Amino acid sequence: MKKIVVLLIILFPLLMFSNVIIQKAVDLNNDSLNEKVILEGDYISSIFIDNLKLTIVGKESTTIELGFGAYEPSIDFYDFDGDKELDIFVKGYSGGSGNYNYYYIYSYENGELLNPDFIFLKLETSFMDGFKALIKYEDAYTYIDLSDRKEEYINMNAYNKYEKFIGEYNELFIGGVNELYPYDFGNDGVYELSGKIKISGLYHADTIGYANFIYSIKEKRIRWLEISKIIYVK
Image (cartoon, rainbow, N blue to C red; front, side):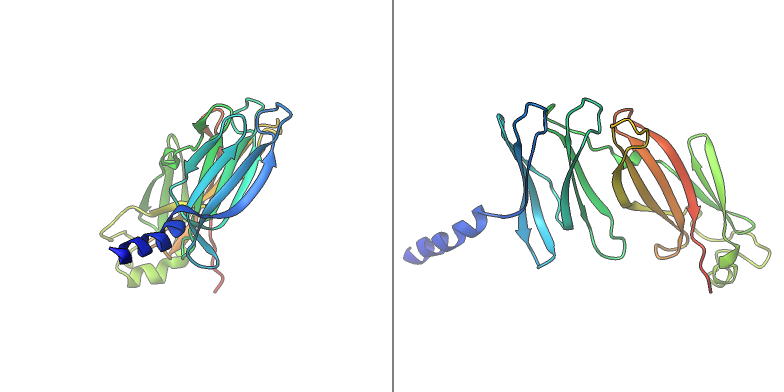
């Protein structure tokens, strides 16, 4: 019984307290009083922080479990929804070969999450004969030339020597958001999200290009979309 009591005394502080990663004082709701915005988490290594938690201390205090861990977490403040109040933008990186963005956007004044679901960018993709890839979004579409991969794709039995697609899977790989940052697209003080999503061919490391987009949280829609190709110089 004594061993159990001692063990609880040792573990209790470790389980209850996390590290303050970032702390900033910002007037989020234009009342001339600064709120304290605190990002906390648990260091898994010297560079990776897990169990990230956001706390806002003001007239009303809020604590939010963000539900992810990340490398290089950061906090910035922008008006995304056009209400003239600052929203909180938390971002970090997954690491690894994809190194995707994790993000969390919160309106303190309205007490709501503003995160868009990036499933909204439903790209339809397919390999086509003649070493081409079709990229389609709603009623718009474009083609990417894949002839620079001709020899590799024939060797992998994705195309035959007559340039006909013979692969088993016709769709390309669409990755997660590789880059995401606030950008005032309309130069009106209301910020959009500028991002980049990787498009891969026969396998994830076969990077063909990127879907570059600007998304308006206020309008809940894509305002700009461009498909860019990656050109490898051999």
